[in-house]
Image 1: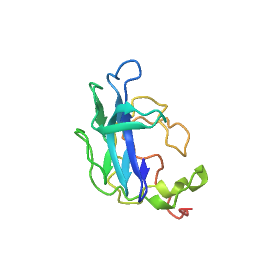
Image 2: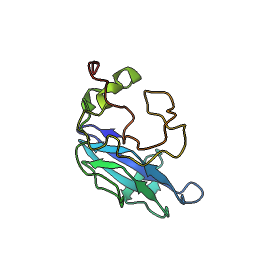
Image 3: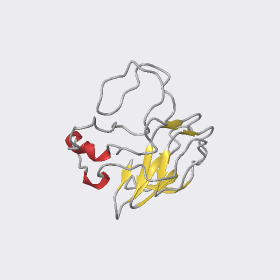
Image 4: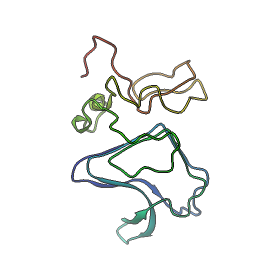
Length: 153
């Protein structure tokens, strides 16, 4: 999840929708903030449907954060979490379309490559590729690096 400059975003917003979540799992994500971002919970909802948020997970319980990357944002309790630049290709260059998503491709040398939580099914897939028959280490991002000789466009 990318938060651009001059933006203030609740990356994950825990809320009471007729009961707080139990056992939510967030794994193999990259939380990348150039602006202001946090994991938060809803404390109130204003008449214009805008949430008032505070840092943390609120009354949500047994929250599992596993193998995520936290860059520019406060890390959560995450035993295998990373807190370094994931080395995106051009994170601020992507726009609202799948055609520009290559800006989120990981560059060679990224610590997020092949270091994520192991896939437990054969349906594991990246954003840009079909399901993989392999079960094993996953990238902590939706796009794999390009094949040698391929362009990053």
